Length: 128
Image (cartoon, rainbow, N blue to C red; front, side, top):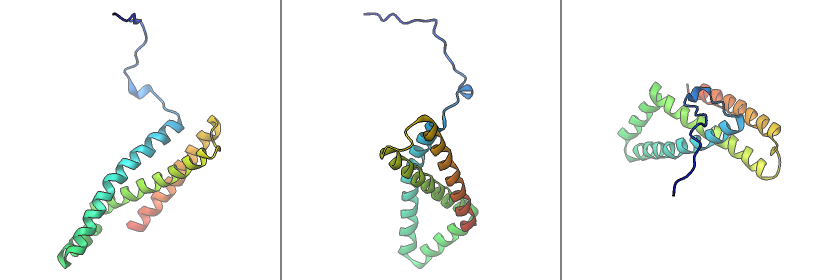
């Protein structure tokens, strides 16, 4: 059985021309932040285990936390946590029947980006 597929349909292979709406970006970033948190919890549990194992392990974790790379990793985890929390609250409010229209959904997505940016800067100031 052959399907009659129109071979003349337009195909856009230039992904840089595609512009997602703010609501789609917010949804995708919420999922990405969840994946980052999944792996971030593993990193934090590993650091906790090392810190509790011995005095040398604690010193190693303290050295990691004072290293710029370690601070960057911790900042990334805190930023992902902030976005996931703000995005989760946004989704809960939408589940209650608010901000379901396109305009209000776009506005709430943009506000969640702004709140996350502020929280990310605050986390960076606190860590650095």
